[in-house]
Amino acid sequence: MPRYRLDIEYDGSAFSGWQRQAGQRSIQEAIEDAIKAFCGEDVSIRGAGRTDAGVHATGQVAHVDLAKDWPADTVRDALNAHLGLASDAVAILAARQVGAEFDARFSATARHYLYRIVNRRARLALEAKRAWWVPKPLDAEAMDKAAQHLVGRHDFTTFRSIHCQANSPLRTLDRLDVTRVGDVIEIRASARSFLHNQVRSMAGTLKRVGEGAWTPGDVKDALAAADRARCGPVAPPDGLYLIAVDYPAGT
Image (cartoon, rainbow, N blue to C red; front, side, top):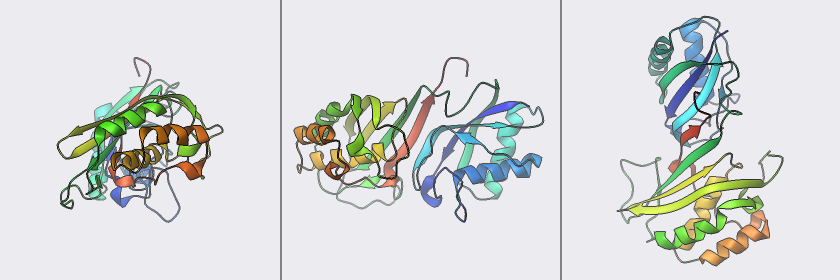
């Protein structure tokens, strides 16, 4: 049974998130429905990350096992055709056959997220639901300085949702950078894995620093407290994107 890797982008605004949920439209369901329409198979696909409702992706990865050995381009084009017919804001960027040992979730060596803030007085028109609009001026340099306190291996209980099902709050954050280009502030985070709501929790906390309510030292203290009550407000899902997933060479 051939296994296919799917590289995926989507606008998460109209979805309940990646994972299939009864009574709500999910990205997983949209793709599985497209596979059913294409080849008649009822399948379950596995994604590299279970993005929440409203979160977007430009580099999500999933894998699926199909009964027939289809050309990879046929899989890509057929799924895109059926996703289009269903008016789902999901696109299969690429499909290719991989070995049976490849697992979109467990083979991943790193995940990369981008959080976008549009920092201007005017409300959003074109980027509504695709960025967090913050009208109050933010100091991106102070935010970046604060972010560096979070890089490394830590107990991230402070930045972990109370609904997180991970066995341990320990994670190694490889990168957390804050940069500004014009009105856009970008927060880029990289790690092998993240806790539930970790990136949005960090983004909301860094926003407090940017507006002057917190100092970078306050972020360091909040991390050390390992107390969810010490987290800043969780940033909305609109600005969060899963932009890439890394795998061993050849996959």
